[in-house]
Structure formats: C-alpha cells, structure tokens
Amino acid sequence: MIHFNNENDFQLSSPQKYERWINQIILSEKHRLGEINYVFCDDDFLLKINQDYLNHDTYTDIITFDYRVGRELFSDIYISTDRVKENAEKFGVSFENELNRVMAHGILHLCGYGDATDAEKRIMREKENEKIDMFHVEH
Image 1 (cartoon, one colour):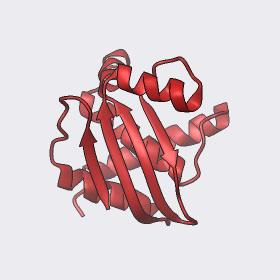
Image 2: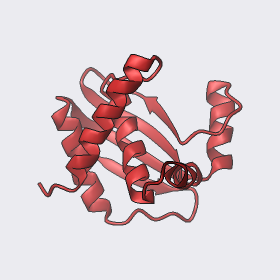
Image 3: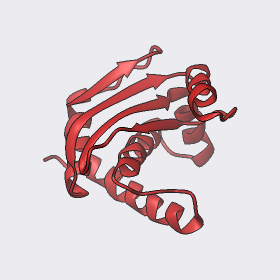
C-alpha cells in the first residue's frame, strides 16, 4: 500500500496515477510493494529530521528510511516540496518533473541503488530518467 501524507499545504495531483506509477517502478525492479509512506513537507520539517536522525545539518530534498524485508519494500519517504521547487528552477525543469525524479529516487534507493560515488550517481540518474519516462505511460 502507498500512502501520501502532507506536513505542509502541498497536495499531490492525481494520487491514483502516482500510486500506479510507483507500483510499476517497484515491479520493474523485481521487488514487491509492502508499505510506502510519502510525507510531503517544507524545508524546516525535513531539516529537523536530517538533524535528529542523520546528524546532518543541511537542507535536502529527500530522506528515505528503509525498512525493507528481503525484496518487499517498506519505507517512510520524506520530500521537501520547497527543495523540489528550488531544484526545478535551478535545473530548468517543471516542478512535476523534479517531483517525479525525487519520488523515483527514493524507490530506487529501496531497490538497492546508491549515489555515493560518481559511478553510482550516473547509474541512479539513468534509472531516474527511465522511471520518469514510465510516468507518462498508462498501464
């Protein structure tokens, strides 16, 4: 099951479409859906989580807590819509495109993809683009 929660005034458009898309990402990576909780929040909310749980004192666009059991995915994924908006402007893409990139990014981490090295970042970006392309395909 996939849940979309808000700690700010952001509302996800077409949650059912996002739910189908996320399920397709998970299946395409040969994993199973357990329970995924997306929490949309502002910069300050996510900064506090970053400080309290990861000992990082920086703003970030996403934090993914991984509770998977084998190939079954369970997670709380926090996304700062402030960061998504700023990054969309910075990279010259739409808010929706950047939001999709970040949402897919969290799932890809759960599927075992990292982003610590340049090689991992390159693979992660390729996978993000592949999954974003899936968003516009009706299943």
